[in-house]
Amino acid sequence: MSLNYYAIGQRIKEYRKRSQLSQAMLSELIDKSSTYVSYIESGNKSMSLETFVRIANALEIPTDLLLSEQLNGSIAAANQEITMILSDCSDYERVVIVKAAKTLKTTLREHRYLLKLKRR
Image (tube, rainbow, N blue to C red):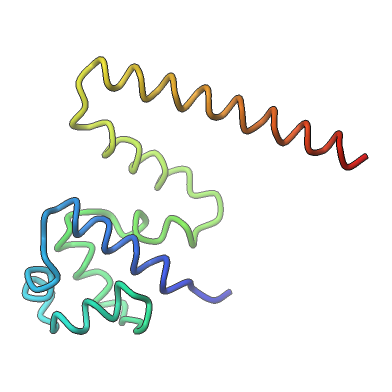
């Protein structure tokens, strides 16, 4: 198995922006250069485990959120991400988002079923 460093870098970038940190601010928190942070986010450089943990700690998120696309069946990471998305929502927004997610799930499953029928 090889890791998709571009996907990991994009997740780091996403959470850095959610935390309203610039690359320079994150680089100070992890004691690396902002150029290095840029390389990590673009997937051009891999990082040590120590740097990876420093980034997660600086962003105040669990490491599995950064690896969620790399982990098979990572329901825990998905649950954490959904919880983070919903954490600052109003009651109304939560109801709408949950209803939209349920509708999307139903539509995806129906579409998958129809594709299977077409292939027969």
